[in-house]
Image (spheres, rainbow, N blue to C red):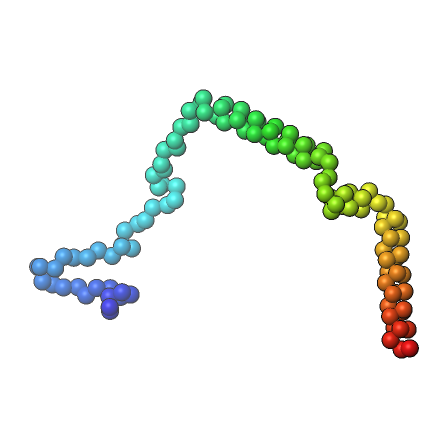
Length: 115
């Protein structure tokens, strides 16, 4: 445990091997490190991959157009389409009417509880 951060003790006995300091010889730079060869890609695989990719993209585009042009189904979908078609002023008028109606109901409820 004592040799973790310190130098090992030097021994003069012939049975022990002389240990070398790892920092005693010069190191190497990053540029001198050996590089691994780059694998080559076959020429035929790339064209097929691009063709398949193009087919997939066009199929996805067709599916997106079909979803966008589909008619809304159900009560909630029709309500959403109606709300999307409203202009800003129509939306504000509708919200105002709802708020006035809510206040009227609250006022009637309050008058009824005091009588």
